[in-house]
Amino acid sequence: MTQARVIGRVEILRLAVMLVLVVAAPTVGDIGSCGEAPADLDAAAFFREKAAVDCARCQACGFSTAACTRACDPMQPVQSFSEGCYPIVHDGDVCLRALEAASCETYASFVADQGSTISTECNFCPPEAKP
Figure: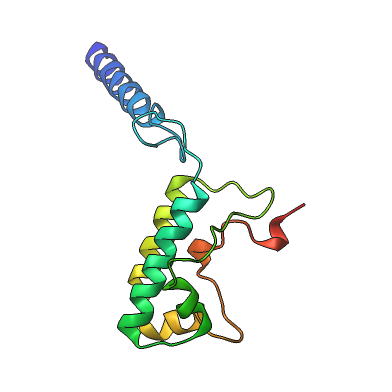
């Protein structure tokens, strides 16, 4: 009977150690850039980089829309995010990677002269989400 008790205590101790290891893990969303606070996305830098991606994709895919012309024009005025919209650097990185990975067929909808769409990864502050 004492051997069963010892085995029971060892198993309980082993279970407790496993629970501590599993439960002590960071929560979803807690994992960031080595403890750094999220940084706000610089609108001027982001829109400049997005225009460069748009221009390159327009040229690679052979598009000649008004949006492509604007993207390739270095004299375009600096854009800003809409009021109350505060995306973070990670949002901008995800958006740019999604644009670079999009097929020409998909990209055509982003730069269309009529009925253009926006990549969901780049829709930082959709109007329907505003209070």
